Length: 447
Ligand code: UDP
Figure (cartoon, rainbow, N blue to C red):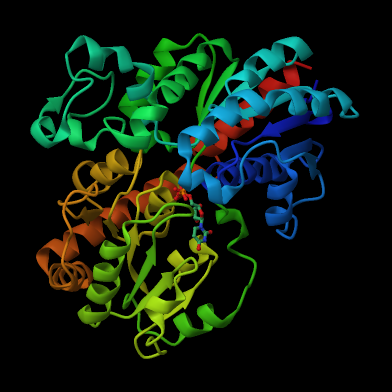
């Protein structure tokens, strides 16, 4: 029987954070493009619904909401451990009630890996659960094999003394310094590591692992995961809205970009919910301004620092269509916090990256950008330890944006190569494209 002729009803359960929601929504859009017959219920809190309701989406994806049982998006940055606790304890019951009320009932669940209880829920409802891991496969492997760190005496560890020590025992993961592992050695990271490790281990109980990575970009680690699990492991990335780029769009910042020279603008975005210290931010803003490089800056509620910016120096926005911006010919560099979606978007757009990680997986992602893939650079003195001065930042930005230097040319050639790999993965018959087809067939067969 043709799998496309069956009615799949997928309940999509995102972890309530911007990067996670975007990745899941983009995958849902891809699934619905592939199979217009699919029905998808995208399950979010009432608060998230207000953020997302206006975004365009296909008709066969609809929102189903439950009350705000978890702290607001703002509180996530202030109290990350508390936020995680409420995800673990307050979210399951209202989501279960909602799933039981869905009509028709869901035939499969696609849940963020951080929602560990979703696996049990799938069992109760007698439907398969696909676990969506919206970070790198490398980080998944590190968390899944976290015991190895303890067995080798590398956890806990004081990074100020041992940060340079090399770890080479995570299956499929290239050599990595302790300082480049996710930031679980202190602070909020330390408080949340148990939750993250448990989440990765819970994947054992699911029926699929879906990674937003691109197979060719992390093949050695993905191969080890495929060997490890008795169920399919599908890479479908990048899970970003590249399929919407064809539609035309215009607005003030895109028009401003249209008027800039090719490759001349630095795009600055430090992620959706965390920031560096205020003193460091002062240095960053002053340093980028002093570099003389024009910029498009996503500054969330930070208007005071940019009062003197005019259209000759740059443009400041509260939010933008990031992938579209990155793909604009005027963008010559991307200052990123190294979130996984942003990292892959930079690669997909073929834009070299300047990474300044702030938290969690942004450290290993930045290492990947600078050392494994060599598609960018990163500041060395990061991690909240030293204040990097505006003078140093201005010099660094100037060097980074110079596309004529040997280093600049190599970085740009390399990112173009990886861009090509990414584009091939999502093109018809590519690794990500085929995996999406395979996943759809699987969940149809389960019907
Ligand atoms: N993003 C966006 N517009 C902005 C800033 C960010 O569309 O002005 C998107 C970005 O394209 C990415 C997501 O928000 O898909 C952020 O996810 P990421 O994993 O990079 O970082 P997080 O914010 O989760 O740390």
